[in-house]
Structures are given as C-alpha cells and as structure tokens.
Length: 437
Image 1 (cartoon, rainbow, N blue to C red):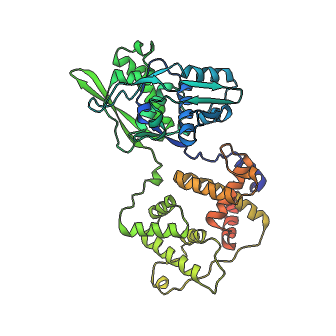
Image 2 (cartoon, helix red, strand yellow):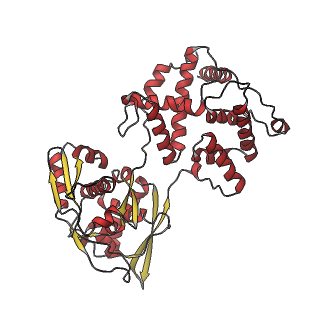
Image 3 (tube, helix red, strand yellow):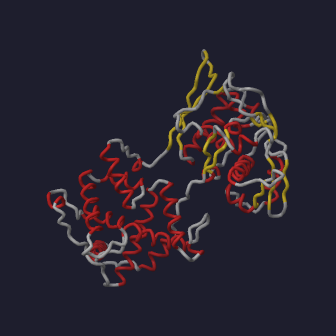
C-alpha cells in the first residue's frame, strides 16, 4: 500500500532543525602580534580572549583615557565560551595581564629594527557584566592601523580545541594569498605555538614536537578552518632546521569557476545587473552553455521591457525560471524577439502549494550554502531590512522561527511564486514517489 505524502506541518517541524550558515567575522590582526612569542604558556582560552579584545579594539573607539569596554556575555559568545564557570573566564583574562610577549620574532634580520617585548594588555578591569582593558603603547598604533596583518575569522577561532592549533591557523592565514609561509626555525615556531615555557622545553627534539604538537595542530586546522596547510621541512645536513607551510584557501568545488574570457565576464556582469549574486552568476556559467545563458538574459530583458505584459516583480527570479525551464531557445526565434509569456500564477490546491513551499525552502537552504560569504551577507541584510518583526530577523543566534521565515522569503526572492505548471509537476512527482513506497 502506498504511503501518503507527508504533510507540510511535519516537513516544517523538521525544517526548523536547519541552521543558517555563519557569516564570516574577520578582523585585521597585526602581524607583530601574530608573530609574537609569549614568555610563558598561553592557554587556548587566553588566545581566544586576546582575539576578542583585539577585534573589539579594531572595530570600536576607546574612551578618552584609552580604555576599551566589552560585555562579558558578548565576549563569551564571540569566542564560543558556553561554560557557566565565569570565575575561570575572569581568571584567564587577569592572567593575560601577566604574559610578556616578544614581538615579531620571525621578521628577517635586516628588517627587524629593534627587539621589543611587553605585555599586550597592561591594564584590565572586570565587573560583573563588563571587561575594560588597555593595549600596550608599543603595539597600540600597529593594532589599530596595521600595515601588515592576518585576516583572522572569529567564527573559526572559536572552533579550535587546542591552543597550538589556533596559533598555527593565525600564522598560516596571513599567507593565504601567497600560497606558502615564510621559513622559520622550528624551535622559534615551537615557542610561538607553545610559549617559551616549561612545556616547550619538553620538546627539545624536533621529532617529538612534530608528533605531539605539530601534526595534531595541522590536522585540526585542516578540519576546522577554511584553509588547508601542508608541512614543508628544510634540512641542514640530516637534521630538520627550518619549517614552512604551504597554504591554500579551501573552497567548495562548485565555486571554483574561473571566469577569464571577455564574453563570460560580460555575461556575469549582465546577470549581476539583473539582480543575481556574483557567485551564483559564475555558478550558472559552469552549469549552462554560454549561448544558453546569453539567450536567457536576452529573453528576460525583452520580457521585462514588454509594456503589454504584466510587469515583472522579480526580474532575477524570472531569469532563473527561464534557465531552469529552457524557455529561451538558442535559435532565430530568440533573435526575432518571439517571446512567449510565462505561465500565470496558480491559485489552486492549498495543500500542494504548502508542500511545494516546504520543498522550495529546502532548495533555498542549499542555494544559500553555495553562495560566497559576501553574497550570503547581502541576502541576510536584504531580508532583515524588509522583515518588520524583530524576532524573525536573522541574528548571531537565530531562532527556528526566524530560520523558517528567512528560507521561505529566500525561496520566493530567488524563484518567485510557483506557476501552475510547476505545481502540477511537483504534485506528479509526489504521487510517483508515494507509489514507489
């Protein structure tokens, strides 16, 4: 006996489990700090707290006396600290005030003007709700206006479980565009990762440092970050002296579309003008022939300009339907401007429409995940601007109701209202799937 199709209510409750992908939250971390060597052990929590404070300083003004303020609750959220042990968080913050750093330890000999060392945060005040801090006068200008920096993403920072992994990520992400890091003496790099502490002195031989610290850190960076790193060892005689890392940006395969020729660039520009995100326009050129894309653009532009037809409310959604349904045929008919009207909006069975909307929301989630972070951010901003209900806006912590509302809106924003033919085809697919069961 065939199973009945699931109701939209059941589908909706499962859809509420979907999570909105995190939008990257990078900040510019001065290279002097990235390449610093702590003169003591630096815990994972302290590394994360330090990043939260530096990010806050780069994005907000200090008071007239040079103090920055940050809500403890916001800081905990920023670094993924979900423990109820607030005393441990505060104690770790106080300990930061005691850690002395030697700055920019891997600068080339000829470019390191002078040896510098200081604490990074010389003054800290903690109340029940806020943390206030000041930044070392030696580093303040470089921290606020860095000429050389690493773009450190706080969403990635909070994922790490090992302090050494976070240190490796910060070191390597700076060289993302170069493709490989500078060479560094392995003991110097050991001290960057572990601090110049009793723990680092446990790894006097490279083979133990590599096995116990370096390899696990590389594995965690490759698993948690958006970059991939590969160790390169440099020998002097038979011993490892320097190390280096190959670095490349990790991107989904479907986004690795190279657009170089003039015709393709023109088509991408045309689609962006119509309203498609750049990453989607590039993806379309991977999935369709250029002639098909050019014909679909021409078809859409002619339809949008037709004063006799009903005005298109969403030109970008119409272009997607033209491509999906093959309405534009690459032949003389398109050149002559013989454009057929899109099927009219359906007002039929509400159950089918409801289930179609659930299906479309799932498709919208997949579509959203395929976009570049910049395009994701733009869509979220567009949605929030038109969403009058604050509880349904997409925020750092988004409710299930807001997720549902966002993907419902996104489905309509991307593809528009379903036509009669689309609903009929969807209903036929549901019946066929039920019959197989």
